[in-house]
Length: 355
Image (cartoon, rainbow, N blue to C red; front, side, top):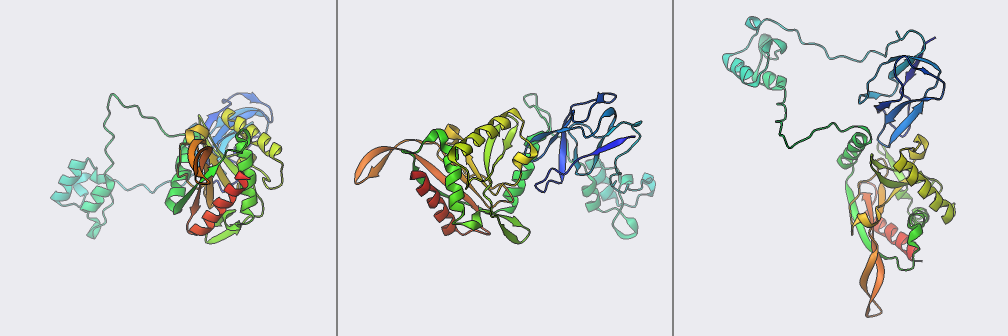
């Protein structure tokens, strides 16, 4: 009996996935739970095990293709005759001999200059006459001019998903960034992220509108503190989630941060480790510079950044002294959070970090 394996719902509102790499080939005998396929989402690349054993009869979706959730990817067992659901096809325009095409000499000349076949265009003018707009609409964009010093490759996998996800965030969210200095002199920077997660979780209880997400025209307040940590890997940016940051010890948070970071760099994060974040923290250590303006992790409403920490001259009690200083930023969705509330939240985090 043939088993049709469909692209599963990987959560977080994902509606599609890219076939990053097949781990099997047609005709191969596999067992249940053997590695089957790698799927790239806007979070990471996930290895999916086979839900059934048998011979791989037919692979229906090639590597690099992007398909919606529910698409049949592969047939296991049987004779491989099962087919995926038919995709909607565009209605083909009826071709007609050029001498039957209704178009003025001007339009015919324009079509010739643009390389447009008038026989493949449905006219929108009176009695089906082809207009200038019809011709321009049917013109294919010119292929990019090739240069010997250029190399082109498609944006695929985690990078493609990140490309689309961040494009949406930038398009939909009006971001504002607030910045302030923080004195890290007495902060144990070896456990910096754990300390930041704890300070953020405790501060979010005072500012619940930042621990929320936008759902259509509603702001959904979340009563859990599962904070994502942005990790840059060779494959792209991923955001694993550290759970229950308000109630766990610093040692537990520190261990979890290190474990998730190691898994991210090894490409071994599970879908569950990437779901359900309520807020995001980003810190790139020495690479962070003095300040960046990070994009909000849609559909969240804010992200906190911690930047390079170094010795700086500062004034204390009327004297110039050297302290370990760094900047802290809060980038927020100005549709749902006003500037004072975001600033007060950032200051609350800094007070907790400085002790």
